Length: 86
Image (cartoon, rainbow, N blue to C red):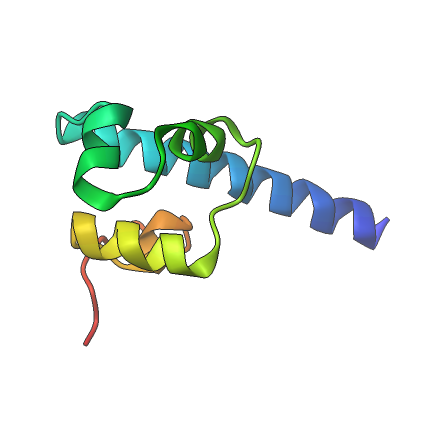
């Protein structure tokens, strides 16, 4: 039962991350193609990240966080504060 709760929590957090990635992109006026041009991350991968078909690797999370000027914790929905603590 504990494993089931853990899987549910991870699934929920994964859905939240997908939503956060799409929200960051659309609220800043980017299409997946324009984001690809700015970051070098392939449009097909961006789509898979947003649709939950793939989980972004650490390097990609770092690139997106830097591009959007938010923390990785914000992308991962571990916080609702986008500020980066340095």
